[in-house]
Image 1 (cartoon, rainbow, N blue to C red):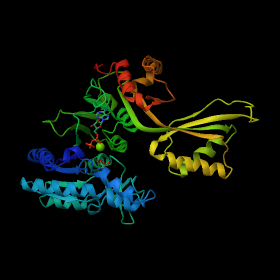
Image 2 (cartoon, rainbow, N blue to C red):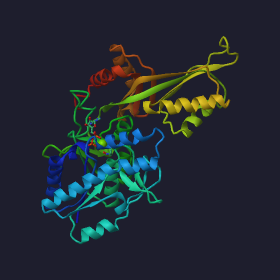
Image 3 (spheres, helix red, strand yellow):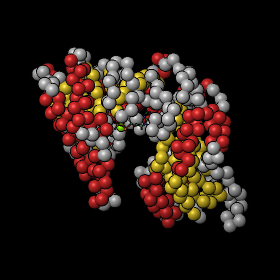
Length: 419
Ligand code: ADP
Ligand code: ASP
Ligand code: MG
């Protein structure tokens, strides 16, 4: 029997009416002859509420209990979806992660898949079940504890099931009708793409486009899963939405294909750090040990014989997620207290955002950076940090200019036009 994976995100299962609307889409695929694995998120807002409750108990909460609490939102929607399908005479059964069992690593709140055994679900399909409704975002460690996959993780559950069960396609139903040149909620002239290359989507996701979790794109690319994003609110058919696929299936030839943003960034500068071999390791090793995710890094040119500092000194600037500032500050202060590093001052800027342009065409075209910086300059937006890779350029700017920057870049690269 051909099999489809259909994933419904939080807004698509926000109440019983929406669950029913989603269930109708599933029923239609069953009527067309598919066995279906449905992956559900928690109702919209639920996971945030659960996270808030956990954080309310203590800032140093036990990560295992965090997972036990936040995974529960998906359990509710899995059961409700199965009940709704049963009411429509579609044989359906819900599965929590441990019942499959979805085996993951024990990195709580950031677990990775180890194995998804098929036997239990296949046995039920063989008995006549048509739909397995699986709670997204969760798994079980080899210690038998509930784990979660990081925010947005139901996308990754969906792709992992599509790979494990050899699904014909993995359809991600959400509150927009596809992947756009930038977030359609920020730019009124964002354009929907029919197709996007895995690598571009991977960059966009990792640079903040939350329409797909980064890891889900990585898995789809590795296991050659046909991945599609489409609307759960509109009528859809086999050609709806956006297909994430190999580069050679794509006709568009724009140099830049999308703009992404990440709102909640912070910038830290260590002022007058000693400039000597090993200093970067001495700064970034304690940050890594403290679980701080450092993103962009700039080391300024060395100032020789600076007034109070005989010998070379420099400033070191890096960006991190804004909610890790206190952890980073403590790691740096501890490293200074123990004599591993020396600096005069630690300066924090919590009001920055990252804006990036992405496109595989950049590999073979010069001038993208110049065009990007010119567009930002025309809006009087100051660039604080720059980072580049083969297919992206990112800048850190004041958060208050984020929307303006996204729009200016979208216009500068004429992304509203197909090319
Ligand atoms: P779900 O709850 O269905 O998982 P998410 O909120 O996680 O939905 O992801 C969908 C959202 O992603 C959209 O509502 C949109 O605001 C945002 N988004 C960001 N970048 C893009 C993009 N390039 N294309 C489409 N949506 C995007
Ligand atoms: N409910 C989880 C979250 O909000 C997982 C998901 O929706 O993908 O992050
Ligand atoms: Mg999501």
